[in-house]
Image 1 (cartoon, rainbow, N blue to C red):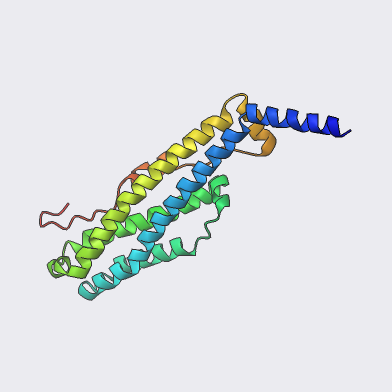
Image 2 (image 1 turned 60 degrees about the horizontal axis):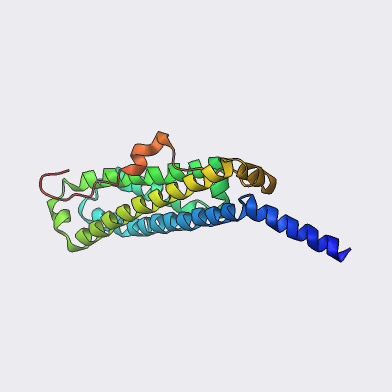
Amino acid sequence: MRVKMFAFLMLLVTMLSGCGYNQIQANDEAVKSSWAEVLNQYKRRADLVPNLVNVVKGYAEHEKEVLTQVTEARAKVGSMQVTPEVLNDPAAFARFQQAQGELSSALSRLMVVTENYPNLKADASFRDLQAQLEGTENRITVARNRYIKAVEAYNVHVRSFPTNLTAKMFGYDVKPSFTVDNEKAISDAPAVNFGGSGK
């Protein structure tokens, strides 16, 4: 009986190693790792927002509507429960994308408004925050691109024969990625050029 069980287990291990199971695991981990970096960079951006709003408020108090939009968009992003399950739930992923897109749009409007305040643009704290925001937006773009590539590799693997049979057997479905609908929004960083010539 033990010999038959051992032989069955060896056969199962051989089948799993030859059917793409290990590669599915490797690709899944790559997706999770790249997603963690996306979240890390989005959090970094969200952490900059309160300081940015406070500095702008000191110079542009009557831009209350724009400041409120930024604050509300940041609050919406902060209130989202982003669990690992987001990667397997296209609807939850879309809600995450939408919230981040709203924050990007609100920050863009805020940056446009600041062009009207030369004293604000000359403020050292504001210039430092602007540099941090610009660097963070660049890191977000890089992290998103890595995530998109990791998802592409994973999705191609779980949809290819015969690996797709293994994926179905173990419940590995395709993962959502950034969509074409908001491609412009996710590829454009907020305008943070504070030169005298505008954009």
